[in-house]
Length: 285
Image (cartoon, rainbow, N blue to C red; front, side, top):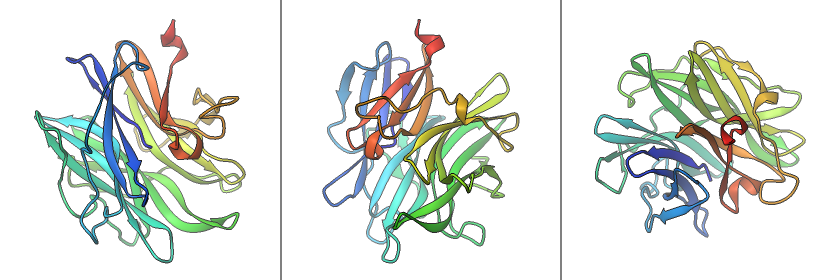
């Protein structure tokens, strides 16, 4: 789940980090290398995990799966989702950060604490951070859990998408500005944002969890990265008529590679059979 692509230009590869769970539902991060000319062509798969679960009692002791990767000087920063199981609710989620030095094959945690911790505005969970370096600062959009709610007899987190800033990509300040709000008549969660900036316009793709149907992918635009206009009907993708993504689509990650725009995403059961990709139609021919 949570495919997180990175373009390796010198190797002509798209490396996609992803989360995978064991029989006890503990999540870890691995990757697969795809041809940048044809992402359907698998070149190599990691033989070991590049990020393991955290120590017992830490915020990520039940899982550490990727959400966003960026290059910072001679390092790579992997922003990830840390899982911790709970007793009265199924789990808690948090934003984590790990670093990999160029030439290394493993990510090292930067802290045993979340990079955005709980407070009076952020009382439950935060996760799925997406970061870009823009206008001299690091900008993050992330999933913020507001409350637990029961849908058809099952507990879920009601969540929105918020914004934060940093001067170093490590220490973050958030005013808890809500970028993507919920339609309370139809939805109970939006999350896993992915943001690209093109021609001074911010474009965001994200997951939408509906009350009466499973995940779909939404889309929004902004001129400042803080105030967004939802345009979900312009997301450009929906479920297939049959197959691995016929029931739901979620966790989009959009990347531009060699003149094409790709969206990597999960399908049915949040990615039970893996992940797939789509290519922007205007780039395809």
